[in-house]
Figure 1 (cartoon, rainbow, N blue to C red):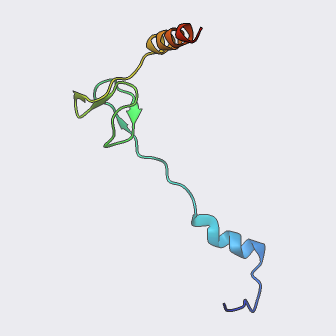
Figure 2: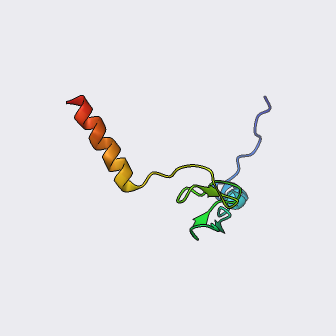
Figure 3: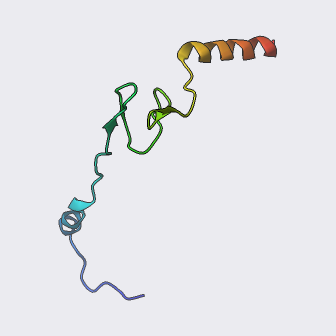
Amino acid sequence: MPKVKHRHSKSRGRKRRTHWKLDEPALVKCSQCGKERTPHQVCPYCGYYKGKKVMHVETLEERRDRRDKRNKRAK
C-alpha cells in the first residue's frame, strides 16, 4: 500500500465531505387516503396500491383484541 506523503488538515477533509449528504425521500399523496407515502409502494396506512386493496392494515382495536386473546390463552 502506498504511504501518504503529506497529511491533509481536518478542514480540508471536511470541505471534501460537504457533498456527502442525504436527499429527502420522494413522497407522493396516496390516491385512496390522501396521506404521504413513497412512490411505487403499498400505502402503509390504507394498504392500497394503484387503486387496488393489496394488503390488510390492522387497526389499533384489532391489534388490542389480538393481544388480549393471546394473553387469555397463555393464562
